[in-house]
Length: 79
Image 1: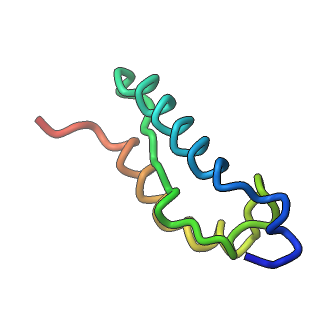
Image 2: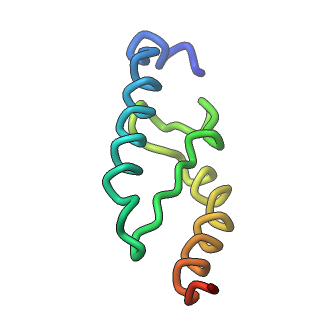
C-alpha cells in the first residue's frame, strides 16, 4: 500500500468487508436467480485507488471470472 494512503486505511476495513460479504451471501442464498461471487481473495492492496474504489486494471483482472459467473447463471441447471 502506498505510504500516502496508509494513515486513512484501517485494518477494520477488511473485517467490515468480510462481514458485509457474509451477510450478502446469506441474504441471496435462497434465490436461484442471484449468484454471490466473493472476489476479496483476488484483491491486492495495489488494486485500490482508495479505500472504496478499484483501479481499472483490477476490473480487467476480474473480468474473465465475472463473465464466467454470468454465463453459468444464464445456463439452465442440470439435474
